[in-house]
Image (cartoon, rainbow, N blue to C red; front, side, top):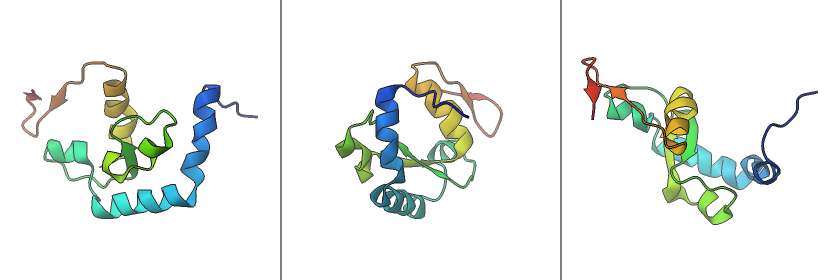
Length: 102
């Protein structure tokens, strides 16, 4: 049996991701912005698969369902770059020419 490693408070709002309202909002976001915003900043064209909350909602339903608080990201950017940003870690990115971007 797989244990849920999320905190009890985080597990409580996980249910929001299974609502029809979220699924519609996610689909609309990915339709309106089909490419990864982070990758586009580096001139890479990558299909987005995640509707990411720009400001972490932490269970706040108004923020969770706010379409203006969403951006489209590819899964690698969401699972690495975005997580590091949220943890306050420095993120060094590189341009198409291989040089670090400021």
